[in-house]
Length: 280
Length: 281
Image (cartoon, rainbow over all chains, first blue to last red; front, side, top):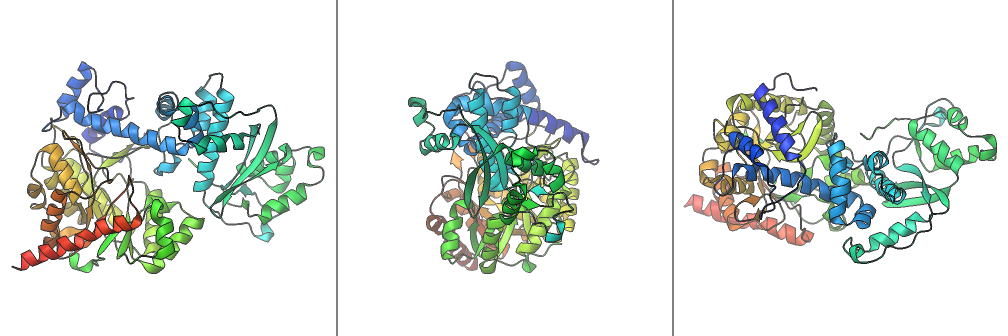
């Protein structure tokens, strides 16, 4: 761990202790909706935290514990409008948000980035039968959030085109989905999450695989259906590749001699940059 | 010694919040100034920056941050500070502020304003970091008092002594949140006057007003309510002692229309006039 060399050791020790309590999952709450702690922990808190005019030491530090989760749950609920409708508030908080935040604490000061690793967490940890639907919901929500937040990086110069490594602008992303997931999502987010606790979800035919490129520009999201070879190319540029490197990742017959056209089209839309960008 | 007189009095402002962007940019209302949450613009580009550019053509702005974590055990984040400095230059912000708290540990952010133990060694640690921040940013830097819900048994001084010690040792400014004084007074059981009467008010360069949630047994700083009478009373007593400084209303939840928010902020003018009249008697 990297700490300020001048930090008083007792301050570091106290912050470590306080931070662990602030991050404890909420279980039983009292009538003020403040978490209750086991007796041994209450004793430890009483050794460190003073009582207030109306609250016990454990209740006082409990406000920070409560606020930590309330705040982060709310942020994730807002960032994942499809998931919150599939799960409802309580299950979303308990089954998704809490275990995600316990595994991936937020390493960036920018709050909107809090949920950017949630699809990764679902891939790693979520094992239920509806895994595919949940993963797609998370991926599509995450892409919307990410593209909305994405910076516009400098466009390549004409002279760069045959020499340099190109990156996909962070406001563009490619994704494969089962069926017409976008219509399903649109139907879902028309209604409040509470509505879906009482009503059946819209139907989705997941038999056909479809691939899309999504981008955010001029205040709107744009999606266009692409083919798997185009997705492979775009994902190569997402990691960074020269045009020749990217082309080497697909078979010639997949591209049907159209790679040049695709590349020109994407370049004309401003989808490339020569700057690498990392989200987290 | 920081000189309050060299800091412009921008008048009465409100926070530039996303929910009001469209209305503000459509009508450019006659507001004295806006406060930007620094983090909302540090990574911005495209439309957000275009909107900011248009705002800057019309209004003065100041930057108020929430994630500096001046009291954290982690090293200062100079990548963040470089971005903040660039934004301060771009916006020509006459000062930059953040909170007297901690909120980050071992690289992980809590996204909260957590309380510091009020000890001399902690004050010295925070003061040194605050001085570094002000030197690095090359603009006046102010720390805001936070609302707190818990105190430590190891505290060696009151919150106001701690606040005073930090800003004096660092030779920086105060951004005084009068709602936070009230919320903390309720949560810790002290009289608000005890707090503000012992502050070096000549260091205050901006006042924050806000509403809070009162749960009876404790108050929470929620910025989603009208400013209560007790907070206006504190404002009316503090403002004349500052020789006239910028005032800002924060509103961050259960949003009102832009116009209603502005009308709430304008109440500060009435309290300023009354307070100045009384002071002149």
